[in-house]
View 1 (cartoon, helix red, strand yellow):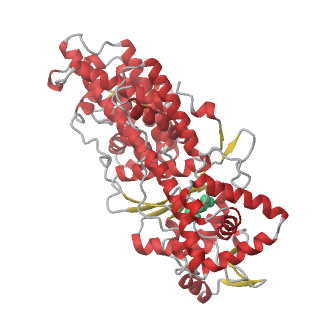
View 2: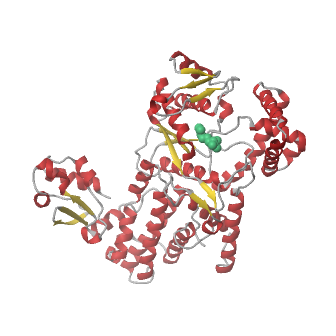
Length: 565
Ligand code: ARG
């Protein structure tokens, strides 16, 4: 925090020998408090300035006119350490008292820039399982984080609504059920037909022949086949929509794979024209040996197009439709190769935005006894996880706070929040082994803990009434615990910007927990309401800032903040 201002003052003190950008890049946050809040390791400039680092530190210190947030500086060996002034920090915080807390209130770094975010991207006829949780909540969090910073995010659900599985489902429905039954039952019923199909197809290969024929009829626009297809899509979207409602997620576009049926040919033409397509056993591929990748298969021998072909068409479509600044794909690292191939092919095609495409990879979710598989039916459904979490939250509320108003709504917020949090706690790339116990654990570093801290602030503010900042004695929040909270509050915007830059929503999650922990440490040691008026005003103000910042942070990662619990 304040690195930019400090860097400027260093540049000025160096008489231009060090630029502000160089200084900012060199600044560090020391691990130990006694080394200051920010430190400049001067050895980084020893070579260019041709001086020993302690000399540089000393000279800079002598001519430095530091920003007001810095109370004092200290030369320690080759380091120049900056210590923030508690009074200045409180002044900075007070200046934010009337700030805007809305979902788009952050620094406007993204003004005029559209970011496409391809996330969740469910497959039709497959119910939502916990493997889909990460892409959904990471994508939605990035969406809100970018919106907060003034970007224009476009949420795209690139539906998996094309492929031979639809032929298989038609065969299954005709053999073991009916269109009417599928329509009136839920997505699990549809999935059970799919599972049964795979079991029986192992014994009876003729099923696959029928399935291919049915898919061909879908491709040809045959009425009967399309009727099945539409019902599958509707049943799935109904179910998925319920999950999105619970997660409070919306998409700006549901243009999925089938949407690109008539948009691939122009792309294939470009590939052809540029001489990028090679025949291989009747199929058309783009060779990528030069980049150590297997060829990218785009048209099969029977003329069928593929997942990659649709993604190429989608890239062109998005560029034309949204004129994006970046196009992000929030998809498991399992598809690393697919995206590397896709981006390379686009680059070879001369697609002008090829360098603005990014695969936002994340780790895999597996079960304690191995990988999940929809085909074998070995999966944990997300709605089941949400229900269990909400039920548990409801039990705890019943036990600890039986007079709680809106028990159902609070239980929903806490239960769903706990599940969302579990997928946003770690760096994206980390694999997750799903365990009910872990997700349903409400103690320690969890969403309920943060939500509870938020509710604690809200209740303190209700008890304390309105505060008067003009009459506040800021010394009452300048204890070590108090200043820790103030510093943490002041670093919120930096945290959100860093989360956007690294595409890591977990930075916001961890921030929320850290702020809650710091506030609780302060809360235990300091009486907020009922002391002398000046102190009460300052402490209520602190509780007010913590409450709003926690709510905003939780909002960014898609977690509710109930006013009481
Ligand atoms: N439906 C795909 C899957 O479940 C993910 C699609 C990701 N988006 C894309 N444009 N390829 O694996």
